[in-house]
Amino acid sequence: MASKEQKIIMIDPSLVYRPEEAIRKANWDFRQFPEDSEDPKLAKVKETYLKMHTNQCVDYVKKRLDHWSKFDKFEATIMEALEQLNDLIDESDPDTDVPNIIHAFQTAERLREAHPEKGWLHLTGLIHDLGKVMAFYGEPQWSTVGDTFIVGCEFGESVVYRNTTFHNNPDNKNSKLNTKYGMYEPNCGLDNVHMSWGHDEYMYRVLKHNKSTIPEEGLYIIRYHSFYPWHTGGDYMHLCNNKDLEMMPWIREFNKFDLYTKKDELPDIEALKPYYQSLIDQYCPGKLKW
Picture 1 (cartoon, rainbow, N blue to C red):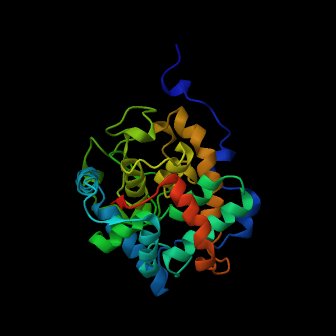
Picture 2: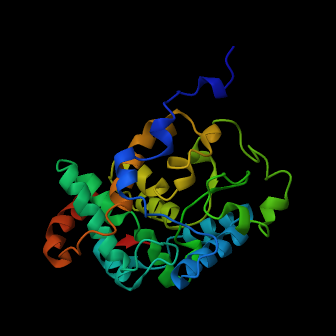
Picture 3: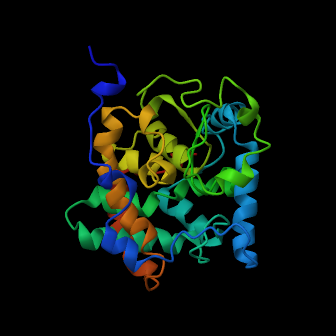
């Protein structure tokens, strides 16, 4: 009889590991993380990941999840929360230094151009990084931004700065947590693992708590779009179930517009607001509890 791992849907690895080859070649300069750069911006990026990889462990993630799942920090509409991103520049991002609200509208507009009939996808693009508002309510950037990874098992090979930043992580020294499966079962599904804490998981939970009607595909994109070691690096496949593999094409499609819009022209945000407000009114209206 086939093992649980063997029952998983098999997919072509070339569809898992990288975005389309043409896009990758045309944008070879994105997501470069040199170990010893003298560029102050890139040094700040590495410092952010060092703090993240030192502190993000199972115990830490559970505490942050409990803290932020009370949804008692503030109340705001989606558009009000987006306005806060005017004052946020992501310290983990080597590709852009513009406020995050600009990236939000860039991503949404490119998705709208490519998928004009999918309003929910346009809205997903607009709000995919909105969980970063945590940075204005006491959460450090290393616990808000950046690529995510699974805690409670060995760290994926493609995690940014993997070989130089995890040496003081408590889980890395725990024999129950630093093996291939760690605290998990084969093919348990991403719904059943603990991700490093950040804006992806937080925004997903905000939307679920406030009963958003964004389709499951959009919620999944929001929850895992920063999980680069999985959707781009091909790590952690042994923990995925069929649902994860079926959803992966949506995340990989979204990633093209999230990553490769960072050098687009600046959008006219005020002119675009009425359209996106109509989507907000449809899928997540009124004031949300955060």
